[in-house]
Length: 277
Ligand code: ADP
Image (cartoon, rainbow, N blue to C red; front, side, top):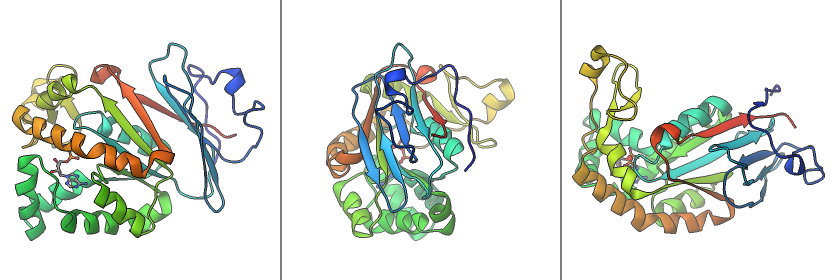
């Protein structure tokens, strides 16, 4: 992979720079910079070594992940409560790294839209804000992960696993990510985000009626709302999320990065950069 530019607005502090003595090895690395504690993680695969760092930031509100060229495709899992910003981050991450974005919720909604047997059953659970049974979800996700594009380009798995049994199923298949990212956003703002969230079915763009309103009346008139984006349903979905998140986190604790933010959607943005080291 070729070199890419490094944003001058974000710089690693000299003592933590990849070129400093703390990073003497010029092998491929991936760095994550966040506002929180400094927690290094070093991961090895056959030909590639990834090193994940959480670096204390100065006053920059954003995060930085910097990765060099790598011999093997990257595998990432991202998790977070409804409306925690997974969609925005997934877009940034997939753009930067060329990963295949696999969202369990999207796969399920496609089944619902196709009115398949699995889709009809899944909808009953989705309407209650509950987890769809593993019999449906596990195979669906596994098959998508094993498609040639995911294998060649690497993948970003979003919204799976959501329970210890789902995580265990992945482990049983020998599927393990390089990093597990948890977006941790306070609950009070999540409900507001969900209730105001709208989708433009033409462009796929997500809006928020208050914080990211549509550009004009034409777009506004065609916006749709997900059937489970109501206050009543989001509270159920949040409860399900909180019941399961710790169990999932424990499976990946050696490779997990928890990103806690307490700001509104428009300021809440991970920034991803790749550098050649
Ligand atoms: P959100 O996480 O914002 O609620 P998603 O689109 O990821 O939205 O999921 C929508 C619904 O699909 C969930 O409430 C749940 O019913 C179902 N679902 C998604 N992912 C899974 C999963 N891994 N296991 C079981 N059910 C799932």
